[in-house]
Each structure stands twice: as structure tokens, then as C-alpha cells.
Image 1 (cartoon, helix red, strand yellow):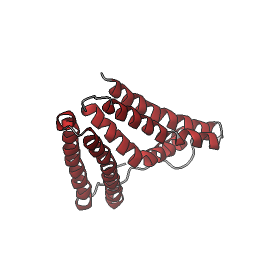
Image 2 (tube, helix red, strand yellow):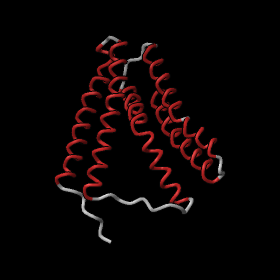
Image 3 (cartoon, helix red, strand yellow):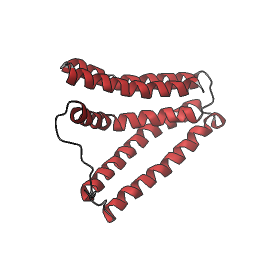
Image 4 (tube, helix red, strand yellow):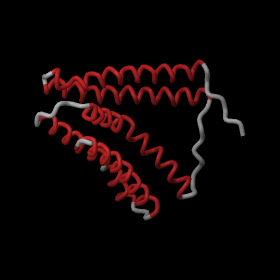
Amino acid sequence: MSFIAWTIIACEISFWVVILLGLITRYLFKRERLGFFFLALTPVIDLLLLIVTATDLYNGATATQVHAIAAIYLGVSIAFGKSMIRWADERFVYYIQKQGSKPVRKAGMAHARHSMKGSLQHLLAYIIGAAFLLAMIYFIDDPSRTEALSETLRLWALVLGIDFVISISYFIWPRPEKAK
């Protein structure tokens, strides 16, 4: 496995470690500012991945699927980061702190709106990730070295389209309430 692949894995693990540290520090140790500091480290992790990926390509590496995944990771992390932290925060408070209300499974139009919001976040992630992919393609300026990036961009556009179709389907056929 390449250095970039290991960097992506390390960044993903680091993302969840700093979130967990932030939540533990905030709620168990009652150190809200220190908890916020840990949560604020998530963009630093993204920046590190961007620097490593760009440096590897600048030094002459041929772009691979792994380089493309780094761009996807950055787009998803930026677009979904705040909602992922909120999701983890709600569950930490309920399951660990034994406070607050239990997170509920959405159904009906609430689920359809939530799904569409996720699709719009996915669109934002695509725009951000595609910008990184297109920038890498532009700066490398060698189609033989950037073919994997172009292929990933096309595949991701297809996945994004499917995501929107699924979200729209929930408005037509809403998710039923879960039987108790």
C-alpha cells in the first residue's frame, strides 16, 4: 500500500480520535475550551492530507485512485464534518452521559428532507472534491498521469446522481414509521 493510502487511513483515524478526545474533554472532564480545541483540529488533518497528496504529485508521481480518494476525503470531510461532529455529539451525550433525548430514526417527510439535505451536502462535497481533482489534473497537465483522477470524477458524478434519485424517491415513497 502506498504512502498516500496510509496517510488517508491515518487521517480518517485521526479525525475520529480528535472528535472523541473533544467530546470526552468537553463532557467528562468539563473542559469546554479544550474540547473545542480538539474538535477544531479536524480541518488541520484535512490540510495535512492535502499537503501530502500535492507534494507526492508535484514530485512526479502518477495519480492513482488513492490520490483521487484523498480529494474525495477532503470534500466529504469539509462538507459533512460539522454534521458528523453533531451526530457524534448527540450520541455521546445520550449513550455515554445518559442525558438528553434518544436519537430518533426519521420517517415520512422528515426523513425525505433529511435525505435531501444529505444529498445537497454530497453535492457540496462533490464540488469541493472535484475542484481538487480538476486542480490536480490542471497542474500536472499530463493526461497519461491523471487518467485515474478523471475516471474517479466521472464515477463520483454517477454516484452523486444516484444519491439524488434515492433522495427524491423518499418524497414519492416516504419511509414508514418503524413498528414498535
